[in-house]
Length: 190
Ligand code: GRF
Image 1: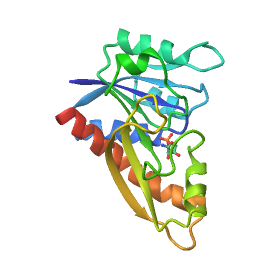
Image 2: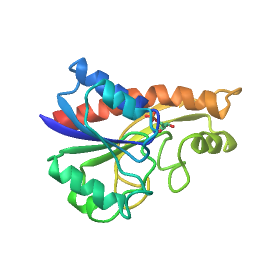
Image 3: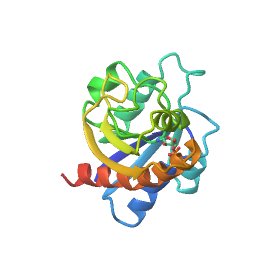
Image 4: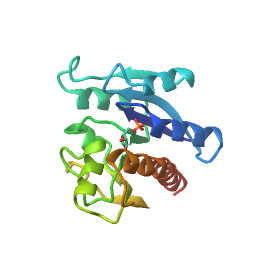
């Protein structure tokens, strides 16, 4: 059975979609551990509620969070790493050791609206500023280029004339949950 580690930084709604999909037996895998970049992330409450071990690896406490995370993943024999609203940037040995085993969910249709600084609400602000007619989300492999790895799956949503960054974010987030579960299913069933 695939051993999954989920990296988080915030509310953890993407994490929750994986937890629920496993419970509903849509995904044949186990979330072995959750790693948060912030001790205040509500995602840690979700970990506790579901009795999933969690670690907080923050830039404040660790000189090189990527290396620390890499060691934890190795020690737990992790097969698949899922960045689910994770705001840290992974670099160094982790990218080699877990090459093609780290995926990320990004709230836009990459390659557009990706890269440094393109996270959370900033993405949707940029999409509206560009007068795009549609947006969506992308699950992709993580490599040394921020949001540049091979695309696995995308879901599209319309941009509506009266959209605000928040209303667009909400519509995209709903599709993220579907897209992420579908992508993990694809990987764990292949
Ligand atoms: C959301 O903005 C989502 O688009 C991005 O990370 C943020 C938080 O997601 N992937 P979550 O609720 O913590 O999963």
